[in-house]
Length: 319
Image (cartoon, rainbow, N blue to C red; front, side, top):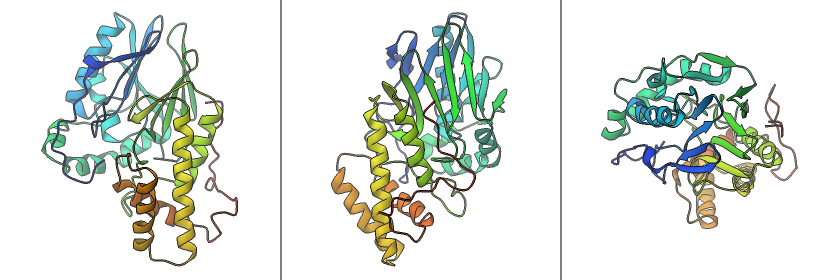
């Protein structure tokens, strides 16, 4: 979700799909803003598509690719979270695939989807064109916390992580291949995306996000497919967690000194850019500072205390 008007075409390119493992490919985003990494995972009798791309035009290309790839196998669709470039093409899969998500994401689609649709339409003409005719599809199957999808000789595990990047974040694990799809819990080569837009959207939680990433790393995947950026090894889970921890610590240290949030954001942004000058998405640093300021407990950032939030447990390593 960039802040400057988008002038490029946020186009998914299925012709550039890359094989990651047996009967498992990713359509990479090649670093293009508002284009996610999309997964296509096969089993003996079914194929699962992970994320749709931005709007029906992109989703129709993904559906055509998946249909050819499936060669008669049943199709399923899931989305890692409700944000437009990940989920706002689901209508193209209606009557062609079974659409399943967790209950928190289903609620996000209903309650926050229309607002995000309007916000994204204002990001520039190419985005608005791709969102023409969008209708937020209703999932066919909704689960609460976990769902093991049998594709035939291959089980794919869908897990709701709880509130982190959004309330309805979901990870998709292919255990026999050691592959983990994270959605925007992970971005490779980019500062973490904090959709911190109070009072309209303040669901992101940096503290929960850190705990979720700790659990995902403990599960030890071999290959990590981020929401955006290149396919990576498991180290990216640690790299992003350490960035979030540093962002928290530097924000809280300054918050303890009663500095104004604007000053905190400027100082922390400069520090993070110095640490990661090659990373994209610098605008998201200040958003992360705002989020961590809201989660400041009044205690030292070095006290060793972290909270998961009332009623929320960190994601289990079993994902």
